[in-house]
Image 1 (cartoon, rainbow, N blue to C red):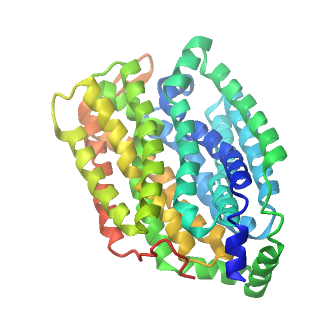
Image 2 (image 1 turned 90 degrees about the vertical axis):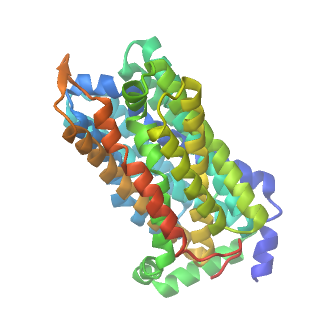
Length: 430
């Protein structure tokens, strides 16, 4: 039966890509929401009169919701229609974006941000769930790389393009209203294109449902939660992913203007290039891993190179603008080794538990997402006495240099974790 399933997944290649990429439009949209604070950080702090800790907390409302809902999302996606859950999630996210856009108080904005994060719990897991049904295991690293590429395109859009749009329209609210309309178009695209699985894989669908029914909800959760490899993968991903939150999502532009003395425009080019690096890195590591039939070795290489590159950024003095932009590209590229944890986890768990198992990986990311940005802001507040300009706190290079120590520390821990991870040789072990 397994060979039949393998064959069925190889005869729908074009439709498989269309379905998966269309679903990944939601991941693209979510990464705009997650990273847009970087482009409008100063405007938000001025509008709502926030300091570093408060803007970090508002940013992290997305991750509070995501961490809360992501594990239930994995269980729901294993049991019910992926398409229907995806449509519900995109609708919640779009409504949350609208509420954030029109918010006049901090708490209303926080509610909107929380709604966006709750919808986001389904975006990546749904793509992996669909991909595992439409593609054979030996294609999953490349497919995961493409899905992550869609997300990083959203992160890229949230940098210079969104900053230029905000400047052109004269208001961050007007720019976010256009963002809300984009969500409506993505809802329509998913409704028209996405299918839960190939039409001729009903035997597989029936077998999956029988396994899930036989095991029951809590035993499925227990099987996924008690597999230490799922947690190792999640920790590695969350640690290598920190530059997305810190440099791409919230503090990258201010860090470059304060520490490396770039203009705001030049800094936005660097953060944009960071996401370009993640795009190429996700595809590159996915292709490389499938090619050499190894998962853990490329993850070790990525962690080692990440430590080296971020060390150059932080400790080599007198870097030119183009060198900094190149380093941001490289940070994005080498930290993209994190995408390999998703196929690794999928290969270490039964296919009918794919979403539940991968949700553990995502839970780890989201916990770091709501814990690290406020902690980063707290470290910024500790370094020195700060002056106020127009009611907004101004931070110094000393503040940033202390807080940035989080990143190389995380990479070193991530490297250590790889030595506890089990190699699958790109084959299902379950």
